[in-house]
Image (cartoon, rainbow, N blue to C red; front, top):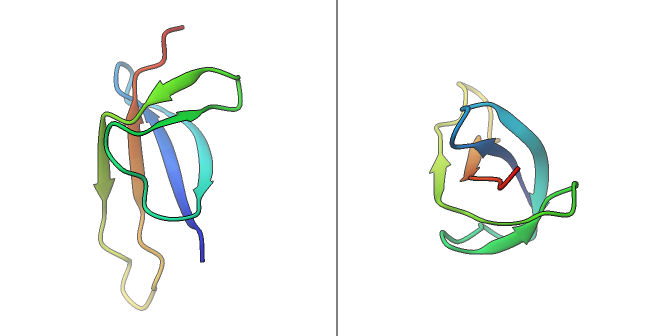
Length: 66
């Protein structure tokens, strides 16, 4: 089962894209965005699922260079 995470921009606070990971991403881990830019995960937030749901919201915060 893969983890669907929202990639968030630390400077604007806006979502950049959604990304699927095979397992929970690690802080300081690197990955490539759809734009082709290599970024590092600065912070990973794991939320609480909504009542009656099993899907947990995951946010990965990055600082793109653009």
